[in-house]
Image 1 (cartoon, each protein chain N blue to C red):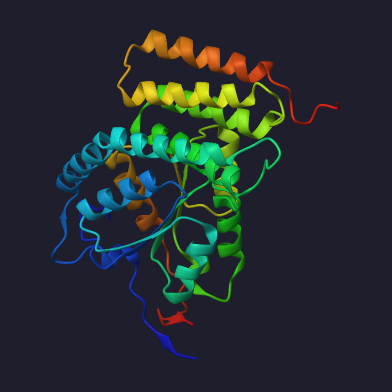
Image 2 (image 1 turned 90 degrees about the vertical axis):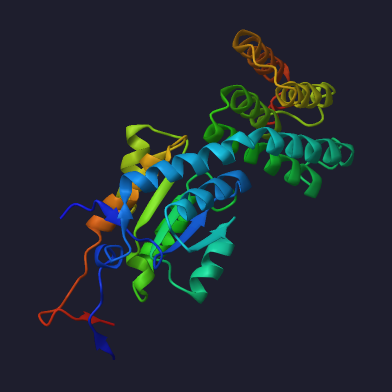
Length: 155
Length: 146
């Protein structure tokens, strides 16, 4: 067994090259702004991913790789939008997740509901910024999701 | 002693989040803070594979991940008392801000808890907090028994 002195984290960050925290936070804010400013491009890329996966998803192969990959993209968008401060996309994605997780894929309205959610995201890519319209759209999507059959309902 | 200046160049960060955007954001903020060793993992599996190679100094981990969430990762780390990584400062990142959620994370051994969205300033204050609280368990000689 080797016993040796160990330096604390506090000591390790307190070296001669330490920079004032206020300065670092300013730099961090700038970096954050740049990354968040690129959320639109990220959203566009993810919407393209969803469109590419959609033809591979049918009610009979629910749960297969395409459905899993689709869900992963929606989940990613939900988390990312929260961080980017995009409340509208976040609301659409929460509704989208509920649709994918809780609703019966064999419901004939499922595909239409999926497309409605993708369209809502596309509108944001196109920078639909009116908060009232976005709020209305989020409510409409939630209603559409609620109207679909619950996957756990007995037939 | 309160820190007013820091040098993160020697500190190894492990960022665990299944969102590419979040990983990107955290990486860029940490780089702007002067960090040079920022490792990214998009799953529990990748995180543990990384930890098998090198033990991070600080872990920032998202709670809501699928299939293995951040809480499960935290539990597994804290339970592995055979390695120093069981004591590594762990910051939980989440979109939930309920008091019950905070208690649960802290109760499982998280050192701090950040609710999304967060600013660079918030991240920095949590880093300073966990660094300040990180204590060495030392024997009488002041050495660390391995």
